[in-house]
View (cartoon, helix red, strand yellow):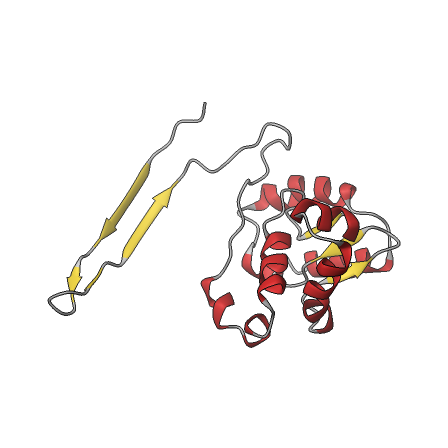
Length: 166
């Protein structure tokens, strides 16, 4: 059991008689832990601006669901890449493989996904922009462990280059 605290402030601001705005700032120092993956995070940061992104808005509903599924997938590592197969991902969603391929095609064409099917490699190139390391231990401990899970392929070299900016 991990002990910590949770604190925050909020302000309830009336805009009209029927509408109120309540901005909040919250802090939690507990973090997250999963039993089978050590002390890696069990959550992902998803910028709410994703819904305003022109590329994301152009996705079909299946495309949006598939992209959010990949972004929050439990096997997605701290560096934004994972070892996986399209048939496996489709099966997890309960979809035929063709439906999954059609759903992610726009993300692939917009380079929002980096894939090497032969190597079973999938990455989200902008993942680290929104999930920056929490501290030096992320880079020195969690990232090397994550890299060991990623298959060797040319795309892994691009992933390493992205990580080196941190």
